[in-house]
Length: 591
Image 1 (tube, rainbow, N blue to C red):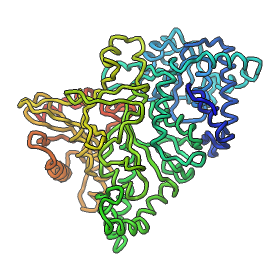
Image 2 (image 1 turned 90 degrees about the vertical axis):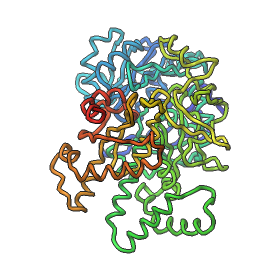
Image 3 (image 1 turned 135 degrees about the vertical axis):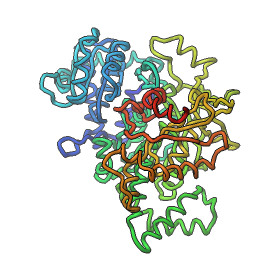
Image 4 (image 1 turned 60 degrees about the vertical axis):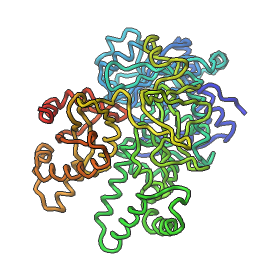
């Protein structure tokens, strides 16, 4: 059996262990799911490698990929590039043009592959400012742009395959594989250098925690591959012989889930919140006994504990709830979904409980781009799952909690460093331990719990520490609150900017016959809306000490988004930008 030490070993391992999976990679084109077998995947990757060699690509050259959606071509290019000894530079499609320019120049990328006309348009705006860029290829057919299929044709000459094999043999496991520029919440993106060993070790050490039925599972992939979380998961899928179907877009996920009927998906907490809110909204539309049963099942799910901890009577009721109510949730998610893996941000415990009760457990994990990414993850088997935690640390990775509560990580998954920035690298890696910037703790059984970001904690003028993420995650349990940012550094008390859940508020207003007006501005100015959200804040404030309670808040009329600049591509708050954007509301709260 192939010994996996480099990223391009995964498809060959898959071919050897599972023969050739007919739907190894599947992308929807013109309304039809187009399947690529393992054998075709490898053949196309080799053709790309041969073509790149003919274009003069050398070891350690950089090739950028910018794609608005996940697709077979992305993975084919990835393997094709890596086999030549060059490195891939994945770029978020939604970032600004000047960030495109910065990343392409900083990485000295020689070629760039883009998905569609919008990405190409943004690239063309800055292309003249990137002197290293020799050419641009597109995945879609775009007039006036070279197409990636031209490389498949160029690479048909198999006489260069011996050169490809030599290039592959020259790639060592400790060699650089990819540079991933973290979006960051402030400043210029940082280029995280990950070696083949960093990611391969993370795949193999995480694989033991994910209960796949090898060679028989089917995944729907829609989180951006340019982020290391989804990319590592795709290698893990290949390792387990999982068929990978690429979702068309976030907007089409509901339809794609029904079409594909996946057994596993990866998700971020915000998406899971939206799924739950949709289910809940449908429940409110029921009447009579059906409505009573729905909310009985919800109440049961909200106190769920794994491994029968709630006793016989609870388990008996849960069995009935699963048959009558939760089975319909599963049907709505394709009927076969039995595992969701969540990362990127903290998952609300109520969601972990309710989905586990519905037999669609969410395996919450924790990690960073700099750790390839997984540090810890929950596992339902062997009592390895605990609600409210990010699981136990994976094999071969060591975690210690510093005196100030910061999580420090050491292991083969820790990055090589930041590209062209040895000073910043030395600041975050000391004694081989990477300083995560997260505050956390272990419980008595070794489960890791994240409490906040070190840099995001602040002190009030009274000297009390505030952990904003903890408060924000609690407040977002309210269906009235879509987004919230806790403020108050150096002020006498914590305050908050709140972006209401406008869709839910419209439903609520309809039921209660409240006139809202025609705009979000009218909604946030509505006294009844403000009063209702105040009730939610007051109720949830009870979970905190007096110094932590949100004393005042202001509602924001616009929806916080990646495009609007309030959120990073991984849906984290850009706190400085939000603070600048709502400086007038800040003054209203504190003046």
